[in-house]
Amino acid sequence: MNAAEDVHYHEPGASGWALTWGPAFALAGWVLELLAGVPTHALLWALVGAGLLGLTALWVYARRRFLSVRVTGTALWQGGESVRVDDIAAVDDVEAPPGTRVLGGGFDVPRKYTAVPVRLTDGTVVLAWARDGAALREALRSGLVDRA
Image 1: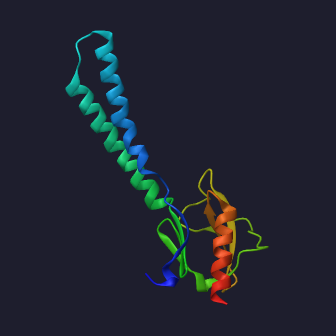
Image 2: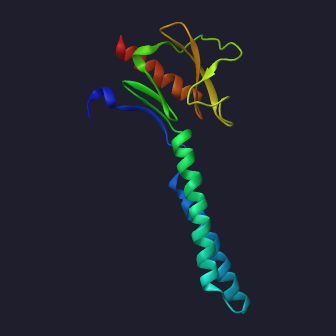
């Protein structure tokens, strides 16, 4: 990996830990049945755990695909969309007018994420976003300094 591809900032969108929730709940249900002294339904609990694991896997996949944020030396990735760092003109003192396009293809900045207005070299303003807006702004700022 060359210096231009070093990751300056990264948010994966979701953690793999969420995949343990469904099987853990199913295991807890089975253990509670054991402790209660009633007939256990191990196969049913295994199916419940597998079903919850499958649903959670879809949720994690969607969040990682559409809510991941990454800044490298060459690009800003927002979900499935990327912007070359060379196309970014400014990240400080940028005002976002109403109706500003949101990077990543959404209609609005995702809930619980901070909007970071970015001016592109063609003069347009777009909204980048991250859970930690200050860290994203700093990573983009360092990318602009590296370019200069």
